[in-house]
Length: 415
Ligand code: ATP
Ligand code: MG
Picture 1 (cartoon, rainbow, N blue to C red):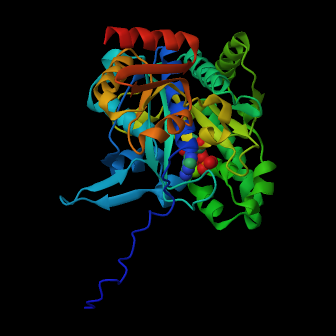
Picture 2: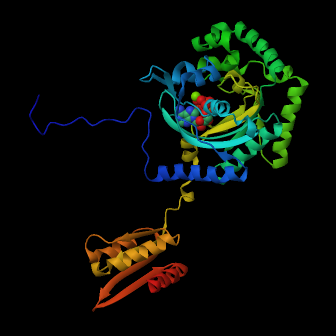
Picture 3: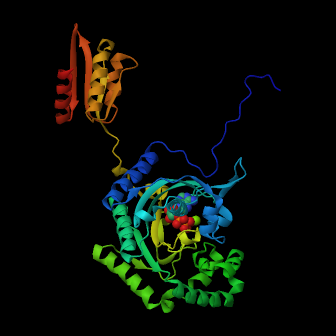
């Protein structure tokens, strides 16, 4: 071993596809989460927390083997007890598992919301990470189209309150009920069989197991065949048509704009009836900011009772990329400059009093006392309070927002 003390210790690198955040982007990220938390209360969604780790079967069984997530993207490992564990690649399956594990049927219909990190082994690029974050909202135990409509109105209001609804379009489809889906599936198989030679290898594998997913393929080779495939309309039963009609009537009544995309399918196998995506062309290829739909078959697939459910998830990073700078206001209420160290105790008391009173306050009390005022003046704040000592007499100087100055004066007098 080398004894050279100057030999460099290799610095550990971040895991590929993960992000560290500080400053502007972290602020926008927090703004997205805060806005979500405020809006979900307006719609009566309860906060829920579920584990980051689940038994692999939770995702393998519910998402379907042929999905990209299960076949290529999961972070799975054996723990020390030999159990196969997976870092959650999405929220819905874990929430469905929790619903069954805890007997939450008693609360149905259950409206819940959460946010947090998710993990997918994808090719990292702009708007696509291996650890990313989602907002998530679900209604479990409701087969009413009003639940679908409410979730969409919720999503629409969220995007509006984030100030990003301009240039973001709600695209909507129905995948019908089981009868509609089966008939459509048969028509799709016929179409894809006729164009076998033009399909990618992945899609040839999907053809046997889940041909709907070919419509969702990102491989450019598949696009012409996918785009010319029959849409579902000719195969919808009248029940499925009525359900979709009730969802769109709810949206129209609430004033939510939408567009039909008759070939929209979702990447995951468990969707029925409503499927939707909010898309934008402002993020390049990663244009879907929010997606979801109805997944009436999922809870049963996990061994629970037949349970109707609908939900959506939105990528926080993608939303944060769209949010404008103007929404972030990091300005403090007060900044206190301590110009003489003998006044430090008074300044600390004032700092505590202001913060206790709900005012965002910072203090500048280090470095050369003569430079502290200028240093404090550079910190964005609505009012600046200078505290010092001149000729044996304590003084305070204030400037900035008048109302805040009154508060600070009152605080100092009380001290
Ligand atoms: P995509 O088509 O972009 O791969 P998806 O269909 O896999 O998306 P969902 O599983 O529906 O996406 O997840 C919902 C949302 O989560 C997406 O619309 C997107 O905003 C975000 N998202 C999904 N995967 C990633 C990722 N790897 N990095 C960042 N955000 C992501
Ligand atoms: Mg994906």
